[in-house]
Image (cartoon, rainbow, N blue to C red; front, top):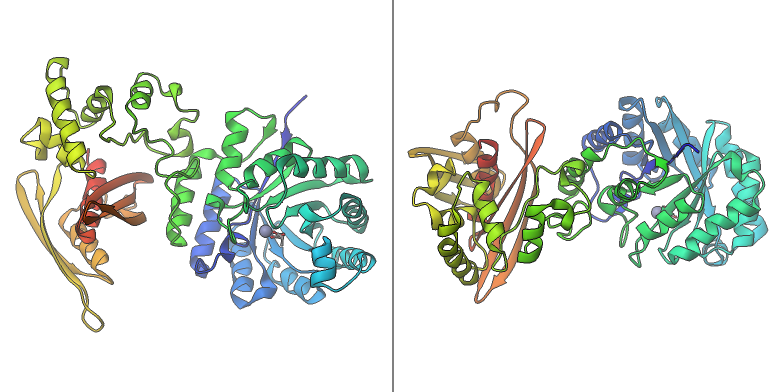
Length: 506
Ligand code: KIV
Ligand code: ZN
């Protein structure tokens, strides 16, 4: 039997964008939609046009700019909402209206002060109304997770008769257990006349940390569309994460065909995180900073000998450059040797014991240390391995109309380059100054370095507060990561930026 298609419906721009403080400008939404389309998602939910002019405009703009992917607009079961969605979608090549109503008793009695029969009629009416505008109508039964299965089946059967092409079964509150959610989908497959003519969709929220498990159970029981967001962002604890579903299907070789190309995952994750100013938790599956980093000695030794000892996913498959092993006081000799090798320092086993001893002392003394600190253990001329190093910097901050200004001195091997720049903030000023000092070969064409993500974490170390800066830099369509720690957060940011540039010029 051939594998069945599993459709990926991305709602980063609708459910994801509902996160307070994460609203995107129109141009950013279009940029993200283009990246999602390039990755190969099947449907982009571009917004909820009746919610305001901004959502309306973004559905129009995305419909104009993205022509090979289906564009979807959300509505309530309200004619005016549907009129607006149809109008916003008028330029879309492939268009879908996503309409629906709450079906649980919480919604019927609590929200609508209504009855099951009335809600059933409103469900039928909204699908019929949407059908006047578009062929592809998706119906959602809001809070289906807490809706009694018999009544849910009645509603679903009726909206299929009214013309719905996709049936969305949202676990709106993230309440269901995986077995329960899977059984709900199975119940519909087995009890609804006409269900074989439509696509069943999952839409799971992560309030109990079960969104991904529930989605997979939904698929195993008959759903053929999954509604997801990049990095699992969304209201409250978020939605099912796109990258987790794609990599579960791929890693387990589940029998479904996906159009999504996993190699885009890391770039999309970085883009969403930086556009929305939402750092990804370091231990987040697939896209967290530590998802492929091994800091315990036993693990590092195993990974260095053979990746598959501790890694079930090849980082390159999701677009991550290489296995970034994080050194710590618990790292073994093999990890240290491998780390030094990545800076072209080959160390024979005779010398390794001595270097290792000094490394453990360093790691125990300084909880946070840089690549340069490690390289100094083996080579006095470590600078030759790090082409660029920060010799000095000075930043003055200010409140408008005074602009922050930064001056930097950077050693390019042995020659000092000095530059200064103003910026919108102290970190921006220092990065601009570094960019003036370090001009890479392709900085003037499309290779130009662009900051993809930037996050700072303050960590207490004894009586000091240490700032850890992580930077991802886009250069020549590749991502380079830089890291540094320092008691001065601006110095940490500058060194992390230079660390990433050194990786480009390696
Ligand atoms: O969670 C939910 O129920 C939704 C619907 C509006 C589809 O986002
Ligand atoms: Zn939702």
